[in-house]
Structure formats: structure tokens, C-alpha cells
Length: 90
Image 1 (cartoon, rainbow, N blue to C red):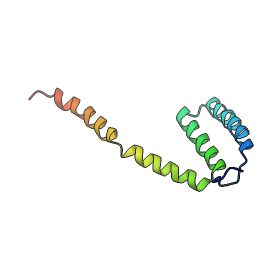
Image 2 (cartoon, rainbow, N blue to C red; image 1 turned 120 degrees about the vertical axis):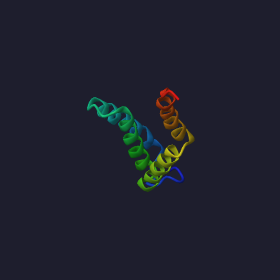
Image 3 (cartoon, rainbow, N blue to C red; image 1 turned 45 degrees about the vertical axis):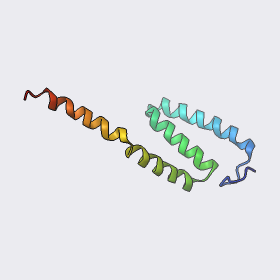
Image 4 (cartoon, rainbow, N blue to C red; image 1 turned 90 degrees about the vertical axis):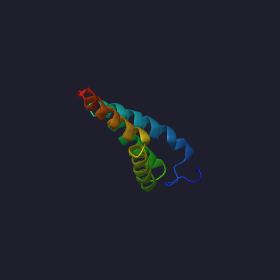
């Protein structure tokens, strides 16, 4: 057993989880689920199985908050809004 694993998942159980994750990913893509959503769903589910679902959901919350509050998300909309306003003759 690997120390720190939530469910006590043995080291040898990681490979079947990874294979099942790839199969699920391709299955979701065949069902026409967007690639980003399929990867996120499979990743969070696999991480939740290996470590625990509470830490997995906390990781989703922290990652999404960190991404939304990034500097780039403030600069790009302002850059796009400057285009129409600069096209208006002064």
C-alpha cells in the first residue's frame, strides 16, 4: 500500500485504473462529449478513486478559482473591448 492514499489503493492497482480511464475517455469522446469535459470528468473521477473524492473535489474548486482569477482573464476581455472603442472616430 502506498502511504497517503485515501482508499489504500495498492501500487499495482494504478495500471487498471489508468487503462479504464483511457477507455472511458475514448468512450465519452465517441458519445460526442467535448474533449475538455471528458478529460476533466475522467481525471477527477480517477483522482477521486485513487486518493479520495473529498480531496478531488477540493482540487477542482481550487483549480477553477485560480484559473478564473488569473491576470490573463482580466486582460483579454479588456483587449477585445478596446477594438470597437478605438474604431470610433474621435
